[in-house]
Length: 98
Image 1: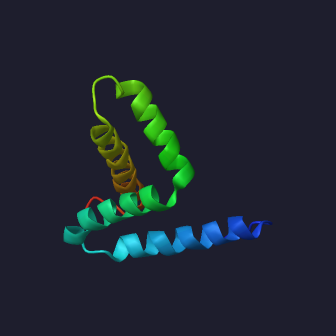
Image 2: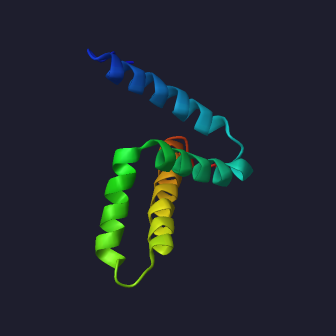
Image 3: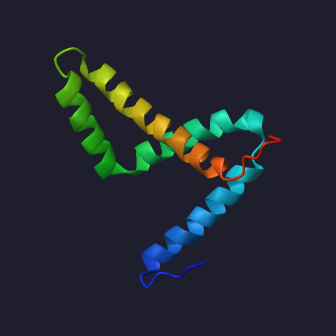
């Protein structure tokens, strides 16, 4: 494993390794739940990205949707990204047998 010169980069590398290990041991029937959890966690803790997403959704759909609908659409985008993140990690372990 590569070690970054910055502590933040090293922490990210270790977290990524732990995340990919956990994703690969989660039973298939539980993955959908954890995908949503991941997206919601990023939505809650990533203030800067959440602000950007809400601004972009508002610019795109602000005239057609109310504030509650815009917020829900922004959150759904993060949930979808959580799903994709887990799928990307899982794709490396997919074989012809599974």
